Image 1 (cartoon, rainbow, N blue to C red):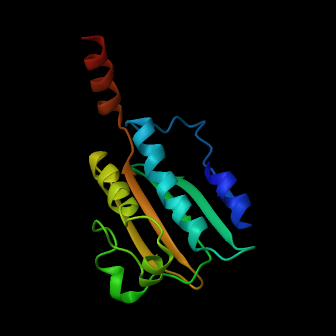
Image 2 (cartoon, one colour; image 1 turned 135 degrees about the vertical axis):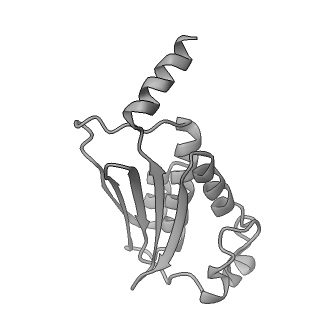
Amino acid sequence: VTCSGMARQQSVIVEPQLLDVSGGAVLFGDAELLRVMVDNLIRNAIRFSPSQGCVNISVESDPSQWIVRVRDSGPGIPEEIMGTLFDRFTQAPTEHVRGRGFGLGLSIAQGIAELHAGSISVRNTDPGCEFVITLPRATQLTIESSAVSSAI
């Protein structure tokens, strides 16, 4: 099930706010892994949003980095697991009862971000929570370096 299909099933509205990249912003990385990372965060946001809730996704860029924000309208993250949220097998107590997943998605997403020299942070908002992915933006030096290594 795609994220949009999951959102329809859960009656959650997904509102993307994408960046105009006509200025030539570049990100180097494995497209499939980056998709898995973002999909994990979007699926979690959909899962924890109430029916008729909203998931906001935005992409921004500054001179040094890409910033992807995924914000849901759910109950937020219990404070007692906030410090271990990106550890393997961490789940909210209610998820153990529901039998959903194994608590690996956020650990995988964080690992993918780190493989791309980035990170993921999280904070509770009112309502919901927001995950923020930061990834380095390619510089002219990395673009030239990539062109040289692909020519070899």
